[in-house]
Length: 261
Image (cartoon, rainbow, N blue to C red):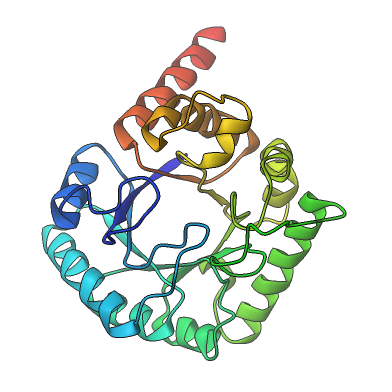
């Protein structure tokens, strides 16, 4: 399974906003063995306010350009804005990670024109309101159906099937119970035939299982458990803050399985 490292070029991300220099953090994650580096300039945590396009672009483009100049690691841009995605790809990004699944005006057409990989994520509502009493009849089925429809819409706009990845959107308009159900039923999303990305690293819903995990940095153990569950389900990539620890957990699980033979 591939490991994507998270770089938040933002002052207000839930886990590490403003805690480090984004370019330095990207190089650290690269050294830790990240297959992809995901650079974001707008927090999408619950309750987050939107960031102006120019400001978001100013945050991410220098980081992407510096990382691209070093090579070795593939770069993703985490944005909802087509113009920011365009600038990021021009600077060296090869993937567009879109929490709104290319629903912004012109987004699907822009993605097809850029010919980059794209992650289509499920989100109920938008960051400012998504955690206000989210409800589903069958969360796993509804997420699968939504993402299948978004993949079809992307392909209708000219995005190649082989460039599409799907993300169930853990924590985006879901209760803790919804998140646990989605993680337990990842095989249903994998069965659609697109590579699946799971981003649950350090998220607050873990407090429902481990109430002592109040701070984001107290949730590394839960994040590693989710990575192992995702690997067993056939997920293609896990998006994490803690690349080195995730690499170690996945390698140990693989070594134990090999010893079984």
